[in-house]
Length: 545
Image (tube, rainbow, N blue to C red; front, side, top):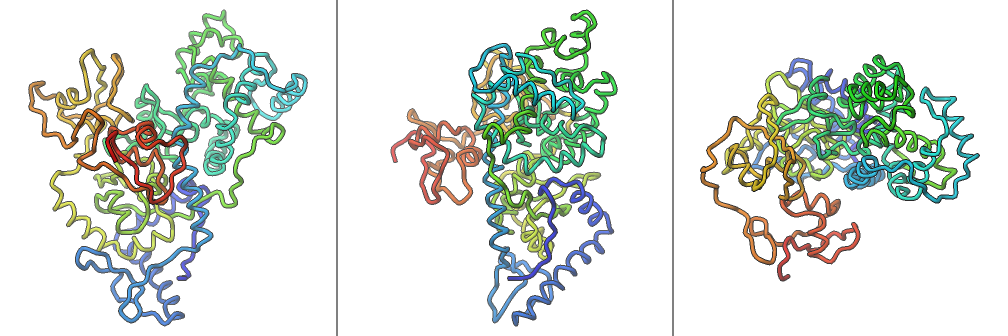
């Protein structure tokens, strides 16, 4: 194996130091930066090559017949640079765990928004034991964690109804919590606030609520803009773990300055400071969360109890037999580089040899799986370190290949639309996606991506985010459809089957084919669980095999 020195970034795409390192590298004048990175890599390759009697080409990479020719060559043969097998295995396990956690957000969000905190749940939890544990938590945290029957009911509810979800969170938290703790400490915020991200998003950076709150910390568009989170048709920094966590720390610090109480700061984070102030007035001036809870919006009334219950279950997971998967290495070994030309995830996947699913996990802020180049912005690509070498050493050839591909595309890529051109559209009776798309001169697929829609179904009164240059007459002719419909189902652009590849899941497959949901795939293929076997041929329509 080629002995490339590895830089271990705790929590993968997440450590702020990794981001700073990338900025420092790419803010050096471009020629020097490229030379520093490439020379270091090539020197390493040459040393290792000499030990294995390999000869390296003098150029870092070449474009031949639209294919990248990589460095390590012996007797005219091109050699693939392989990663350490155990490290790659860890990364593969992490990828599977993180990429398949998307559905957990819906479950957590539904639980918190409809939580009946006064309902009684039968669970073998001794009340006196619970009181002592809550008292211990109260002593070591700045939250008001006093026993009350409502909190006991929420804890029992989670133990009864959300046990599996909590165990998944115990696993995934090993990936995100180190980042959260570092940033919380930087802002002198209680480290226990890290549990808030579980209540907000079930630790899914791509999570999006029905009202448009997005990311690990569920920022609304306006609040994200206030804290300088970039949102455009290509990029949504609310989904960037590092940028969004910094913004959440700033916002929570401001809320605590206003109320002087962390319970009320959490309630304001969920429903806004105005609603908390109204609840204080309506309660007669009380300022303890439990005294104003009944005057808060329904979702917020269950929000702080859900946070406290999550904290309790994490702190006493062992006592309740909650067991996540122990991760021996809670990070990926990754590095970042600022892109110098527009490039798609599909192109990176093809040229560098990394799956699109892995790129989505490591780069969640790119909404369309496209990394743009915009004046005044520095957009970075994060790759596993063993793949970064291939990209850096062949950077010129890669961009040349991408430029050739873009010239051949029949349809141009979506034009970058600034967030100032964003509108909110309210669905009316008789509306459907095609009609709305024609009205604003956009594509149905664009509207679905911008709003996280998994199907074409709309509700009257539903709010849609649309990036547009202006409305078009409603009489505009619809473009020819590429989707062929039949009475038995739908075939996407004539394709009726999908062959399962390593790393595929029902969720990733449904994202590749607009209009097809996970439930569609299960129904059409007789699948009850989530496990897929590589090589399996899945039907993409309710049609004969």
